[in-house]
Length: 49
Image 1 (tube, one colour):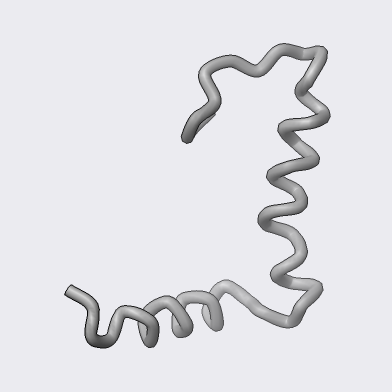
Image 2 (cartoon, one colour):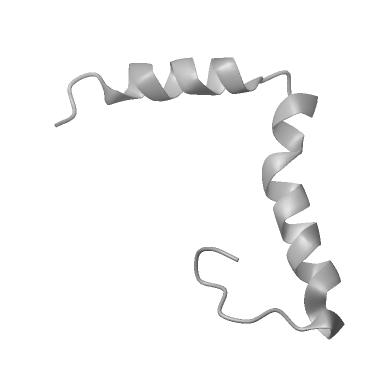
């Protein structure tokens, strides 16, 4: 487990999985692949330190 999660009980495991499913899966449905996300991130870094 990474991030803010310190413990994940079996009782609430489905909630954690649903959250990560929501965060990471819609990007493909929206037509944005990993390579496009990387390109957008790199373009967003221009002018930043």
